[in-house]
Amino acid sequence: MTTTDKAPIVLIHGLWMTPRSWNTWAEYFRSRGHEVIIPGWPGIDDRSVADVRSNPDALKGIGLKQIADHYERIIRALPQKPIIMGHSFGGLLTQMLADRDLGIAYVGVTPGQPAGITTLPASTLWTGTPILANPFGKNGAKPLSKSHFHFTFGNDLGRAESDALWEEFAVNSYNRVFFEGVAAAFNEKGGVSHVNFAKADRAPLLVITGEIDHVVPPAIGQAIVKKYNASGSPALVEYKEYAGRTHRIVSQDGWEEVAEYALDWAVAHSTASSAA
Image (cartoon, rainbow, N blue to C red; front, side, top):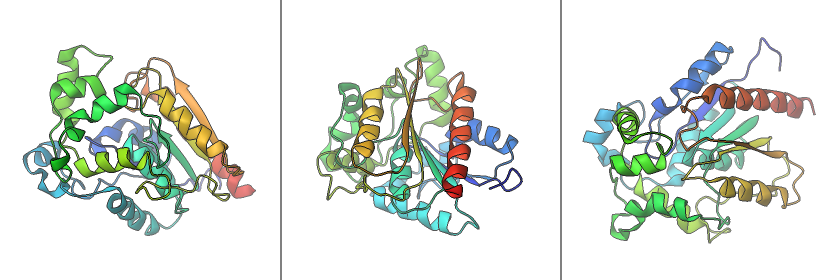
């Protein structure tokens, strides 16, 4: 890969978000000369936040495999393999796509854990309580309250600032995704989010966490990396943690530092991988 032949970048948003959550990083990556593709999850696609909130039916019953298949179709239609980056559940989807050999480098930004990783800190479980408390709502699309958004995304902000961001970005949940993610933690072989940790030819993977993230605390990121690196695979998996960062790491003040590191790492290691 040369500087005049830059890889496209696919960005995968997380639960409760739309592609708009990536606006900061997307603009930066484009300024660095990359084509950036930001597809919405099926049911969100390119819809506005207001439209999704008022008409959430298209989100109901959709699970992780359907979402991963959706992204695989999009990526396979590209003229060349991309760098793939995902945030939160998008980071879990990034790992599932890595298992399908779809990218030249992967970055999981505060990523959800694949099947078999049982590290579930109390704050992580609390983020899912509004959904998990009602098993009969497994196929629903529950709204995210402003108070819960403050806990999950805005815990570095005052309530008024957090509420303003809720108005701008937050959408309903895909309840099934959360149920599948938690259930798979205790079912490594049969969980929907199963990946082959020992896959030898997986392109390089970077896991990024934020110190004060309530949804994916550093303990989860560390457990993910430990699981990959204990598998015996020669594939590169590295870890980077940022002090003072929340689950809103892709748009939180200082996001530029994280975006720059993620892109530089992905470009450097995808080039090295291609050369090898």
